Length: 295
Ligand SMILES: Cc1cc2nc3c(=O)[nH]c(=O)nc-3n(C[C@H](O)[C@H](O)[C@H](O)COP(=O)(O)OP(=O)(O)OC[C@H]3O[C@@H](n4cnc5c(N)ncnc54)[C@H](O)[C@@H]3O)c2cc1C
Image (tube, rainbow, N blue to C red; front, side):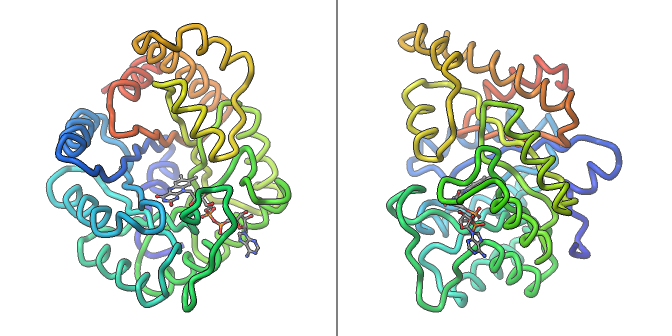
């Protein structure tokens, strides 16, 4: 582990629970207003960190770094920048890593990323670039004092042959310097606990924080689930289909479903929760309240 005390590890090692919120770089002025509204509403919850995604193919590189930097300078929050290998040479990755360090951003989520054709498309190598996230973890460890997070997949990565293979990948990331993992969103607590059990049996000791996506739009979650290879339980999707045309009812059911999943995960020993906020605060705040976590 790096000399920088990972905020996630620090909170968990002190007996606490790590809560984090993920945002994406908006494309429009209205999107920017939504993002900052969500950041300001979630700030009083004192999350362990907040993270900013890196767009497909590195398309948001400058905006991701700028927003992460702005969060570092203008809020009380600890920002984590995402970084992917897609379409970048090692020299270009070094430049982004240097920009994070300059901005005082010491938490980085090291990812391979998806090819421009999406998660199911074949991987496209970049000459002079990296092939897998574990190599990016090694580069970050070698370059600076970063606390490094990595991705994990309760429902198995869509192009991985098996859970065992995924676990070996996770162990390689830990061995190369990762401090913690955050998962893809999922809807069955059993998938998460199966991954954690297999990972621990293989020597993974870093915390694996479950990723939570409260449903707010039925078509959108079906699209996201298909892209990421996340199964949507039949019983759950039937309940959502019944209210699909009533956006308030969908959001309410999304909060109810996410709260039940979070409670099951925390009761079963999950070390924290990472919320995919989609730049909105409403559902995350409601889940927090339902769990009795609101400060
Ligand atoms: C919390 C979270 C945040 C995310 N944020 C972003 C983001 O901001 N931007 C973005 O573009 N994407 C993001 N993603 C998506 C992620 O980039 C994709 O799921 C991607 O397909 C896998 O990334 P990875 O880091 O797990 O890659 P890897 O660990 O490299 O795995 C990719 C595939 O290669 C296989 N593999 C890994 N290592 C090896 C090896 N040494 N030899 C052979 N096969 C190997 C794995 O089994 C897997 O099938 C995020 C995912 C999560 C869970």
